[in-house]
Length: 126
Image (tube, rainbow, N blue to C red; front, side):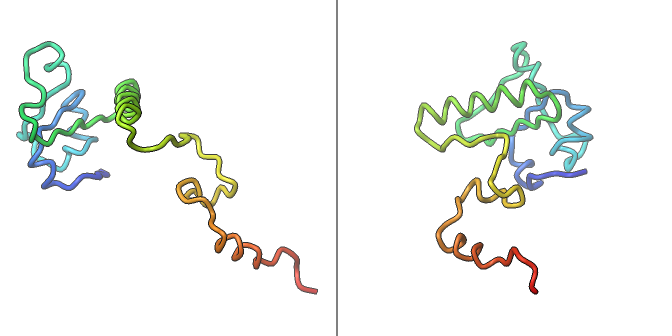
């Protein structure tokens, strides 16, 4: 299946998941063997396993399908960004002037691109 993180990063990380069997077949950890240790979130919440074990540890939460967890992490990151003055707000529903140019939402058209756009022929030649 599709993965986005490098296997060597996963091997150097402490990995947390919602539900190990699902994550092993759909998540990033499908790249690792079934014996690779992971910690389910419920184990931490119940106090049976520790969370992050050191400030230097690389931690990965491999979330694969519980929207409420995704939304909760998104809100936490938004709040932390606001508190620290990092980042900027973006719209989650893209409504660019040109729906085929999603990058315009990140980098608005500059004068040069506007000049190029004015060279586009809109009428049929006679």
